[in-house]
Length: 354
Image (cartoon, rainbow, N blue to C red):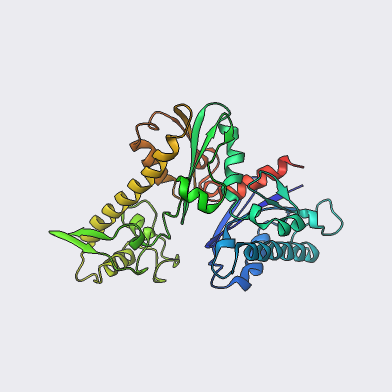
């Protein structure tokens, strides 16, 4: 039996199977929620041997939904409709089942268990934003003893999840409680608006306030600092222009209400360095808060996500973590699995539950 894990986020959809094949693609659900089924079907077509789905999500928070409960119901129904349609059409093979069944879809909860579609629809708040919990639960195989943290940095958010003796020990289970505890930060390596990182930046002999507008994001910072590779085909940027250094220069100049004739490339790089430092310091504060709650020294750190490079910087600069054993999911598996770690985790958890 082949299980595919799906992680439906507000800005990205990620999928991974037990064999370690992974796909990540941008999809802004708030712009076109009606296209979710088509997006899922397209992904399912890339995994034709799938006969069971394990689902987790964060997209219920998207503002196209009036409530999280509405979002959960929409997503569960969309996934189920797409999967059953693919099974019926033969786009996805039924290995051992004669016809589609509702039990083919399992949804992870912050209770640490899977729910059927009906159960998920009845308990939507247990399903909402549970992907971090799936990742933390599965990754404990790497740290059965001692204290440590899981640091998962993605395009939009950062999760810092404490664990002790093979069990996650978070203070919060909801987004709000996790924001309060420092275990969740809405700060990532691609989508965070620069005006949310700092209010002003050094320019020449003084500081210049940043425009409170999404002219540029942390993607532009990381492009200019060579932490994210250029990709001229990628237009998932603040202005829809390519993810290149030249375009990043333009976007960062706009943050100062300027253009490339007023802010040189070298100045843009210096601004990027300053903003990267501010973001890192803020995340370092969250890491320190979580580390202070551990009952003993941090001995193991698990790193995942497309922002693993930033996690390594945080680890290196913190006196409590610099001597810890670092386990990188990118090294253990692949960069693709590290980026789609929650999807891979939920697939692995589902394989163990049957």
